[in-house]
Length: 118
Image (spheres, rainbow, N blue to C red):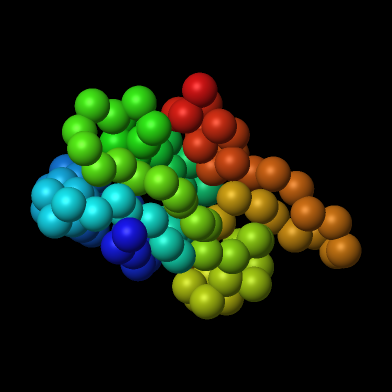
């Protein structure tokens, strides 16, 4: 198994750039774990859109992929936007939950991931 540490942005490396790298990893003959996945996004809407696009692409290489090797796991790097290492004092929206007080709420990115992998 090979891990792909995956701190991505709205446009870098872009879904097609990431997919190109992913295919190269799969061509090594190893399964891939997508690790530390988060998206640096400047708005909640941009984060939602990026998560949807990335996870639609990742799903293609999951358990139903016809190739010999597959993505066998995806790990999101953190829980909530407010405690993320890339939140930049609340100007970035990289994760799937929002913390308000002591409560955590699934945000639009969470639902974008769920919809993308159905």
